[in-house]
Length: 175
Picture 1 (cartoon, rainbow, N blue to C red):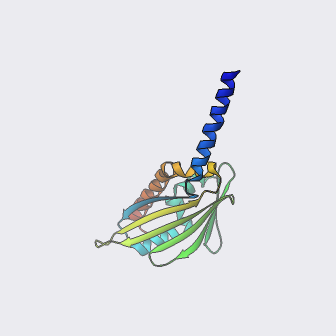
Picture 2: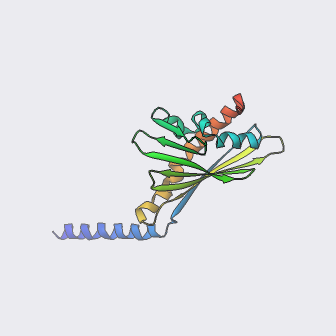
Picture 3: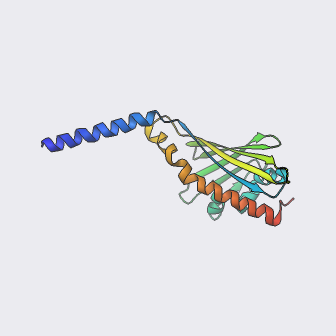
C-alpha cells in the first residue's frame, strides 16, 4: 500500500511539473519552408492565389481531392473536407506584390496564417518562403503540440513546395 501511494504521488508530481513547464512554452508555433523556382515571382504568387490550382501542388488538397474541394464563386476561398469529415477553410486575406496571406481554419478550432513571401533572385528565379503561424491555445497540452509541429507539418509543406516547383517549371502558370 505504501508503494502504491508513493507511485501515485510521484505520477501526480511529474504530471504537474510537466504541465507547469508546458505553461512556459509559447502559445503559438511557426513552421517555415522555402524553395527556389525557375519562374517569375508574379507567376508563382498568381498560381498560389488560384485555389483551383492547389490540387496540382498542395499535398493536403491532393489528399482530400477525392472527398470534397470547393472553391468559392469569387475564387477567394477554398473549403476542403477530409476523410474524417473535418472542414478546412482557406481564405485569401491579402498581400502585396511579393507577399500573399491566406487564413486557414480547421473546423473552426485551429486558426493558422499562411504567408507566401517571394523574392526575385538576380538570375530571374524566385525564392519562395512559406510560413504557417498557428495559435495553439492557452492550455498546457495544447502548447505541447508546438514542440512537434515542425517535425510533423514541415515535411508536408516541403513536399508541397517541391510539387509547386515541379508544376510551375514543367508547364508554367496557365493563364
